Length: 72
Image 1 (cartoon, rainbow, N blue to C red):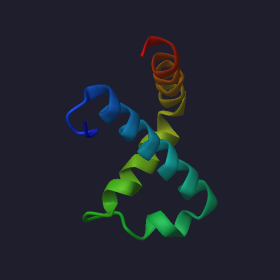
Image 2: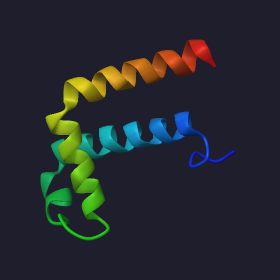
Image 3: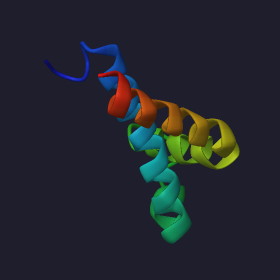
């Protein structure tokens, strides 16, 4: 089953996207900053969420990891 139809997989993909974009922006800020609008602006927005809400994103990642490892 694809990640679109499974809610837990969709949340995992979204969390990984947010974490990856925040990490890439920390390494190379110009890579994401030049694309603030349009389709590629989604990655810039995910990076901003990862930077500003990092404690909440980290808690969600820990909960998701616990869920994947021990509940499934």
